[in-house]
Structure formats: C-alpha cells, structure tokens
Length: 441
Image 1 (cartoon, rainbow, N blue to C red):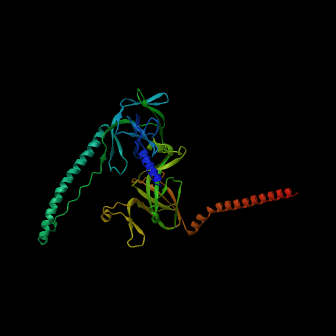
Image 2: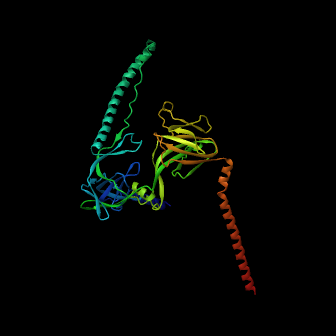
Image 3: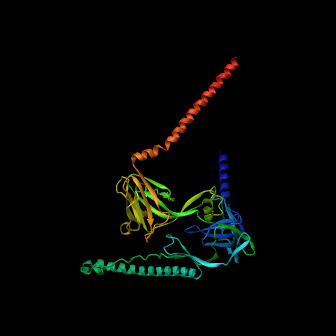
C-alpha cells in the first residue's frame, strides 16, 4: 500500500514537471497583423506555419514584418510570438502583387490610434504622419494637465479641512454668511481623450481579391492576403422584454419577425451589424489558432459591431405611427424586501451616483396583440437603411396554437413510427411460425 502511494506521488511530480516545461521557441519572421474588423483593429500574427491571412477589403490594415521567436502553446492550440525575447522589425519596401502584376509598392509610415470619446467608448481613429504625432502629444498634454489638477486638488483638500475645523469651532458665527461655509473641492476627472504612442508600419488598403505581399528581396516575408467584404450589412437590435431584460434577443435581418406576448414593454438597442464568412472573420481576429473558424468555411454569421446611440425610434401599428422613442440610459432598481422583483427606471447620475446604467436603448410600449413595426430615424429625419423590423404580439389563444402546432408533425411522425414498427413485428412473427411448421413437417 505504501509503495503504491509513493508511486502515485512520483507520477504526480513527473506530470507537474511535464506541464511546467517551457515550450520550445524557434526564431523566425512573422508578420504582425493589425486588422480592421469593421469597428476596431484586432492584433494577430502570421507565422511561417500560417502564410495565408484574411483581412477586410476597402479598409486600412497595418502589417509589420518582424523577426521574433515563435512557439506552439498546446493548451490553446495556437502559435504565439515572444516579442519580449526578440523583436526586430524588418525594414524595406513592401511589394503587393495580384497574379503576376505588381499593383503597389508601400513604404513604412508613422501612425497612431486616437480615441476621441475614450478608450472604452466608440471606435478608434487611425491617424497618420503628423496627425499621429499631434494626437499622441494631445493625450500627453491632457494627462499632464490632469496631474496638475490633482496636485491643486490635494492642496485645496488640505485648505478645506483647515477651514472646516475653523467652521466647527464656532458655526454660529456663519449665520447669515452661509456662502462662506467651506465646500469640499471636486475630484478632478481623468481626461476622456486617449491616443496611443506613434508607431511605424505598412498601411495596406485593398479591394476584394487574393494578393501576394512581401518585403522586396526577402522571400521569408512572403504572405498570401485574402481581402473579403461582408455579404450584407445593416442595423441589428438587442430586444429586451421588460420581464426578461437580462436575456436580450438579437435581431439581425429585416426579414425576421420578432414575437412577443400580449401587452408589454420592450427595450430596443440598435447596433451596426455585418454578415461575414465565419471562417475568414475568425481567422482575421486569431489567425494562428488551429481551432479558430474551424467548420465555418461555408457558414455566414451576423457580427455585432459598435452600438448606435442616436436618432429616434418610430413605432407603428397596422401601418400607422403610434409613438416615437428617444435613446436613453436605463437602470434596473431591485425592489426592497424579501420578495424578488425590479423596476426599470430612467438612469439619473444624481440619484444612482457612481453606479453605471444597466443598459441603453429605446423604450417601446406595446398596447396588446397586433401587428407592430419600428424603424430607426437619424437626427436629420432620414430613415436608416435596413433598420425596419416587424413585431407580432400574440394573445393567449394564438400563443396556445403557436406552441401546439409545431408539436403536431412530431406526434404524427411518432405514430407512423409505432405503426410501422408494429407491422414489422407482425411480419417477423409470421416468418418464425412458418419456419417452425416446415421443421415439424
């Protein structure tokens, strides 16, 4: 028994050593890819094992050939680059060919990403050359100004505490002089604007097609680029019934019909959507993974990009306009007491304080069963293309048939299967009887 325990411990220690072993790194030339996905720029790499990569056509994409060390990570089944160990960018002229014809010769240029509305809000902007330096300098200036405000705030906070102690020594002295009562200084807000450091790379913008890309005179940098476009694009929606606000129902195609039950309130959040080949789009985001996009070569999927937070939602019933709704922020307020429940109220930072809104969107109140539709109208009064949706609100009787009718074919199929099985059993029994009679004879 003791020997078995020692053996198990030894095996465990050996297994830990195997899993903790560092993967073998191989020095090679990869192409660092910063590719536009329709809203943001995603970073991946093209190692020697994956010389074909996918990119959005008619968009600025950044390529940076680099000499680095590559290893295979078995846990996630992908090739990874260790840029901390070795990171030597390759210089030269990038040659872009289509077939046997050279269509472009590209030199490296400086670029940066600017986020006017903040790093986590809205899409970034790719700025080049002198504009890149201006964007980066603007961010640094705003950060320096912020830290200056922080130092001023700290001094103001000290002055406030001294003045407050003086106030509490004799509050009656301030009667009729309420404006002189010390007020706590406001904490300075961190700058919204953000920009990255200026970097250098080859900015490539190609029409749909297949291309060969390489640094002139360096065959190890040769890659095949497949530029593709979305099959369709339009406006998608997250639709939240009030009773199930945590489970939004996506609607990406204007030909879809959204079904709801009876009189209720729904919340509609629009976003920009594109329908793309699943395999190519997944490889765009994570090329050197053996699992990304697998099985999706012939599959097209809708992808949600940035949310649309402007305009007005027009709601119709039987073709007549019944209401309009403005885009707002909403907060889910849990009801007090032991009973579960909540109320969805308009978000007010003065009331909710530092708590963020629960979600954003248009509020739509449906009067009851019937045929509804809605569409998005921009600030100039123009209907946004592909934004129309049809809603069918069904009553209890319609809901009963909507649940029962899909089951009818299954029941009929089950009865047919039982009937055929019984016939098969009868035939089998007849055959056995006849064989027994022949044996007796």
